Length: 389
Picture 1 (cartoon, rainbow, N blue to C red):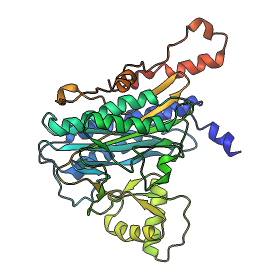
Picture 2 (picture 1 turned 45 degrees about the horizontal axis):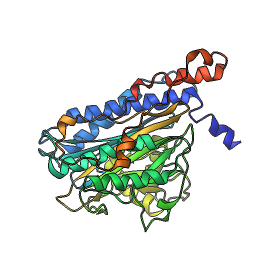
Picture 3 (picture 1 turned 60 degrees about the vertical axis):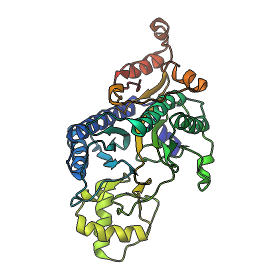
Picture 4 (picture 1 turned 180 degrees about the vertical axis):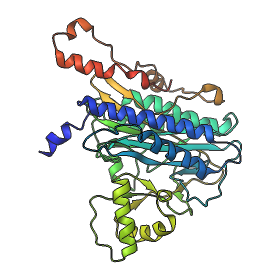
């Protein structure tokens, strides 16, 4: 049955945990590579390419001898969105956008191995310390991430996290960006069934649906904070990031469009992709046809008002039997942020003071129960998953 097939695809299977952690390691390394490549006057599109190239190259070195063949590669194309641009900026190769000193730069990407995807986003200030409202929005995102990992546990509900995002934003004079959803991750699915809204959105009834987190689930926690009103508009920049809708069915009439669609199916499966990864000229035409007939969905480039700043942190976390393990996301260096505001809310302070890991039971008792022993082993490599404290 489908349920049985699915159960072998969750975290109760140690091979699945290994694939998530391997994808996470590649994602974290890709973000570090992108950060190292960013300099004043440097090209944004080239920095995007650094991320995508690292992912492709690193994925090319793992699971090569596996039979049947293991699909692996980009789980979300590298997007680099600057200042008031909210996200999904991964321009075509002729784009001339450059980095400037003091830009607040958001890097967002993902990696999948055998359909198990790890996503991450990190925000930096180019070649100077973040101060003023740039520092406030960065701290808001960072504190929200620290609270979120503590609220993400079996039997907890999504509603508490949504409320927390708004509470944290208020402490730093910012707003969570409306429309941003954190998703459960499932095999071959970057936007799984359960969601956590960044804030209640009157235009989207889905943002009010209550879900309960369960053991062995995986989540991408997506935190986007803004110094503006948190209600971004679509940017005139054309969309370049798309994802195939596996449910959609339509026979394209034009041969050129069919060729583009079969390339999408073959190369990117159900994961998002950038048009730079295909022949851009042919791609532009074919994508329009695919969009018209809803065979693909686009990721619009959204923007706040010019002069505002947006910070983005995204991390992937596994709800394991011994507690929740964060596997992606880079730590922040407090030296890079000069923030004059701090958390004053007693309930948030109390949450931030809670321990992340459950106390480990003594080993002696474990010997009687082989299964529990096996499970424990799996979680012993937690060192890769450092909380952002």
